[in-house]
Image (cartoon, rainbow, N blue to C red; front, side):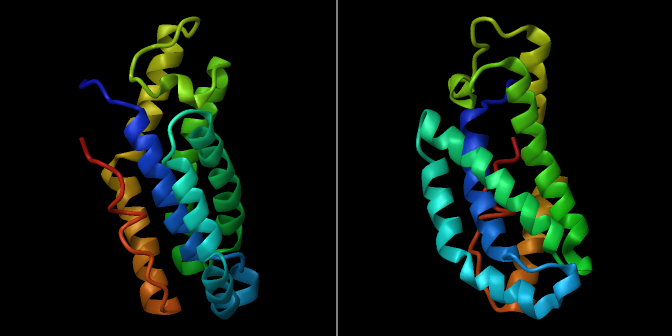
Length: 170
């Protein structure tokens, strides 16, 4: 398996996450598409700020990824049925990275150089690498693209190339 650098995918993921946040808003299945779209439009600035913060090196960027997962989880829970599976895929992959890093007891920023931090077992490091690779997978990228397209078609919100196009494939 090829060595995956973790820093780039994490930063790009944060940009993707910010786009996702813009896509979903704070409305949910029970509230219908209209409230979902309204919330989506209302969250654009918040998502953009998280994207900018997550692109920063060190702990500030790492903290933004965790915050993004929290916001995205709320959005996933509120998404209309026609896009909920895509939200599950995206949030699941992001949460997988956060969980893998948390299990090491080290901050996400320690993995930015692409090498195993001191005190982290090979198994833990491999789990972080696998989680980072999952964020780059076709399945997760396609989920992001679908969320972006839904935002454009249904909510008339342009998320740019954040969700499905922001993560490298290799």
